Length: 216
Length: 196
Image (cartoon, rainbow over all chains, first blue to last red; front, side, top):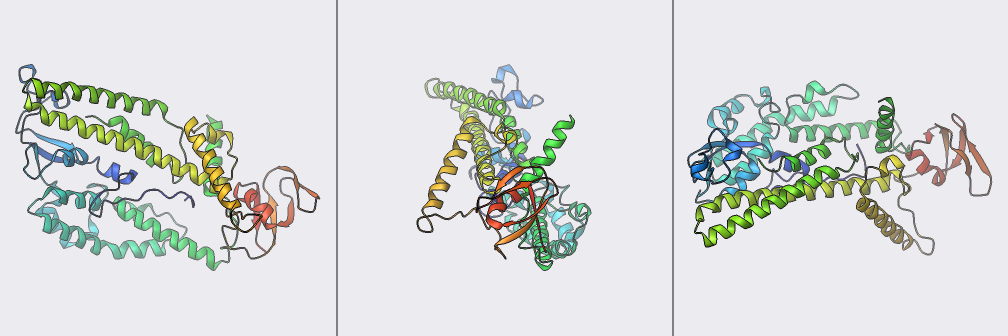
């Protein structure tokens, strides 16, 4: 990992995403189910199966159920629900919440939505009556899984970790990576290599790439 | 849906392994700006129609396009900003002279930014430590000794040491050199620091 590159971190777990965070932009690209509370003229081209056709000014009819990205849902939402109302995605509803409370560790969080925690936290903006339960569920799920992530990141040294991170969501993967870095730095120090000046990883990666360019 | 191209730009950067700078996607950026122009013009026209033609039902549509404009702007700004962070890292990890391969990945404006950053950094470093200034890009790890053992990883040529003598850096040759002269060459992968 480059030592001098400090990317803008995700703010999704807090009250607001970070405007410049690439992670947050990708997280808010994920979709959620919404219901249009009013017709939207001239946008029918995007939702051809539901479009009202030319007589309605090519509108998306009122009452349509669609999947919109989070950023769009957030932008069009207001507390009077004049334009749209939001439905909770299944994984944040009661059924799945029970699964999480039974055993949080067995769930493949990468598959059910790679930004489980971030997306779930931002979902709270839509004032669902289940907000309190959702936030509790997010927290308890994380608490249930954290121990395993910490243990595995601190004990997997110089080995293939793909099996360990396969079922982690993006935030958990970041945590795992941080743990691995700590472990590697410590081992390096223990071996007396901490004072050794090393090749910049950036440089190494460019060299590797140049080689493959030549092969083309 | 709008903003597909903008999201693609962000994804492209996100995919590049930590810190690497992919080529500047001039074409992608142009497409995003074109989409923004089209959205803006459509909204201008619909706003006029809503005001004078009494089409207040157009307001949700106008809002939809407006959100897309904001999203395109966010993606573009984040793309450009993250690239600058990567370019800044190059100064610290690679040095002040970048290889051509890297320079081709940067836009003209980014190159200009890099040069200005270099200058600011140099001015700052000169202002430290009395009359000579202080090179803070050296000694990134606390040094244990003044001289270090290094092995040459590739042919580099003649290298002048402080007292005027020069050393021939040929592949696999080993030398005992002052740390401050070697640090950059080690970071660039020309020399290898050997621990005794």
